[in-house]
Image (cartoon, rainbow, N blue to C red; front, side, top):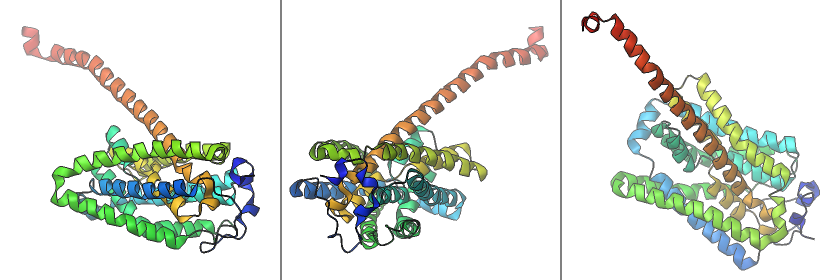
Length: 348
């Protein structure tokens, strides 16, 4: 029987079977995808990640990065939110729902990932501080090279089965490789800024299309094994993680008295993870028989991430519209009162 076709089996710690980063041959799961399809998906994920990171680099401007480095308060709070709130949230939810080792690893990797380019669009929709949003994404992406392996190592100490199972070397290599296209995007934006917007739009479009297409193709290919990633605990975690990120990002930035636009920006940047990077790491760094369909968890995450962000944007727009209407309603009354006190109007 396929271990991932039963929602109860993925919680069984005995299935780890002394997994290590260098040796996964002791795992007895059978591959859930044909080898050709599996390799094709790996290649497509890497290509899409490369394009996404180039487009992300095209949103980064050297002058804005310098400005926020010289006044680092907002960036420091944002980085604290990104690498403090989200990894701790992932760890806490894994413990609370008592996930098995492989599912726990997928959630922890997602929680320790840097922010993604989608957060810039969401911050724009919330009329946030776009300069801060772009610099936050830049800093979290470059800091991921050190912070992500460190956080994974620290949080894996809380699980006896995961201490030697995380492929740190592969993760570091993968993070180092994404800095190359990201740096290429920065250079394009610096020397050929006229192409930046086009590349950014194309990159984000390709990423969103790829998420949907890969999700559908893999779901059809693995049949009942999709139940592993659609199990109630993982669905609940996928819904709670971004919501907690948005909430605590806003609360933390409020404590440090950032402006309203900066608070909305930090909230979006905290709750939004680079799901493309997460999926690629889980899919490529682990053998297919080890992770099974769990590399689709970031797809679950981004679905809830976008739905919850959409709800927040709708609430913000409604609040904004109501405030404008209220201002328009009371403005004439204030003007009339002012006119009644003006002698020139009385004489007229």
